[in-house]
Every structure is written in C-alpha cells, then in structure tokens.
Length: 302
Image (cartoon, rainbow, N blue to C red; front, side, top):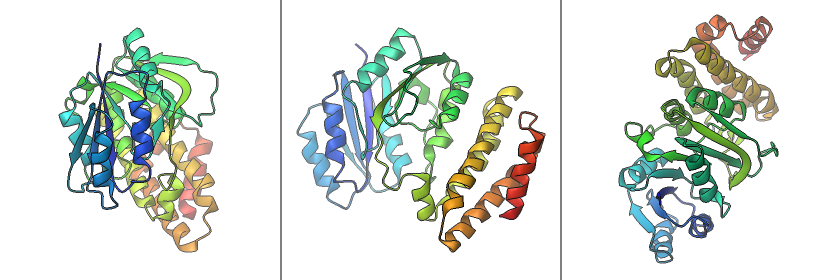
C-alpha cells in the first residue's frame, strides 16, 4: 500500500493545532506519516507539538527557527518518505475520509494529482473533472482553487520544485509549476477541507496592509506563465483569468474598504499591476476590447 506524507506547518496557532492533528489521526486511510514542522512558535506551540506526538507513533516533529511557511513546508518535503504529499495548514482540518478519497481518485484514474474542495464549495454536483496539467490548471483557476490545500500530489513532482522563501501567497508561485509538470489530474467537486478563515483571506491581507504582496504575486504569475509554457492559447487563457481576478478584487473587495488610507494604498497597487502587465493585457486577443477599456479606465482612476 502506498504511503501519504501529510505536512503540517505550525506557527503560533496553539489553539488550533490539536483539532488539525486529530482530524489526521482519525483518517480512514491509515498508511500515513504525519510531519509537523514547528516554525519557531512562541505561544506554547513547541510543547503542544511534542505532546501531540505522544498520541500517535506516525507523528514526526521538526522544530526549527522561524523562517515562514514556505521554509517549513520545504523542510517537510525534505524529510518526507511517502509516495504522496498532502499539505495541511495547522489551523485547518479535514473530513475523516479525505485522504482515502484522494488516494482512490488518484490511483483509480492513474493520475499525478487529485483534488477536492473546501467544505464551503458552492458546486454541489459532485462532478469529476479529469484533464492534463494545462486543462486542470484553467479549471482550478475558474474555481479560484490555486492553493495547495485539498490536493494530493505524487511526491516525485516536487523533485525540483520548492516553495519560495520570503514570499506571501506562496501557493500561487508554486502550484502552476507543479500542475504543469503533471500528465493527468483528477478534480472531485465535493468539499472535504475545512479552511479556518481568520485573517488568511484577501480582506484580511488588505487589513494588514499586504495588498502589495498580493499584487506582486499576480504580476509574477502573469509573466511567469510564459516561462513555464510555450503554448500561446493556454498562456492567454491563464493571463485572462488573472486579469479578471484582479478586476473582481477591485470591485468586490477594494471597493468596500472604508478606511481611506487603506483604499488609497490598495488603489496604488492595482495601478502598479496594470502598468506592469499592460503589454500582456492589450496583446491578449482572448480579452474583449470592452473589458480592456474597462480595466484601463479603472486603473487610471486608481
């Protein structure tokens, strides 16, 4: 039987980590190694992790100096011995049959990656999508599911791929390369992953003044997709979706900010995104002229 390495980065979430680990210990799929990477917690998390390790012999604890979630995940990858990798944030938790479902999806369909959704996923059809890396990437973009959560990967996909150190929104930097290295991906439209909102949301990032990091990430994504794929139609489709996501953030998130200074900073970053990507945007024949003019107008307003 194949083994799944579940990598859980932990930093100052002492009140959440036991719920997370219990959800993993109680999985219906038992052939797991549970790697908890304590990223220098100062809230009692160090001791909490050590105590949790006493619950189950499958748990491995790695304590390290604080270096961020990317570094913690990378350390987890380095010591993982499983055939498959699953990333779980320490303040989230999963349904008891999550890993079994993902393993079955991957093995029955002979795929490289299997995907399920958050429990608030609004598509209740429980449909299954199967495609290559490019098709699946676009499919997941359409559902705003370009994060590491809810995905089971063949470990070999991470042979030459790691998370970027010191970057916010690390999933958006990393996942495209992983997906495009995959020959086959299966996506199951059912919610299994419980995502603890706290301030990990885009709104939370704006409240913390981190819209700059979000925009820098999108600028990278728009330009990087051309470096990791030479298929023009695919590249244009991906870039189009990034542009529309920025539009969505502007109208649905930034538009409701009441703090004038925060809104000013957010608008400044949106304008930066437009200036940095204007050539990609106007050369993209998959974006209508109407939308190009609309995007240009609101960017000039920022």
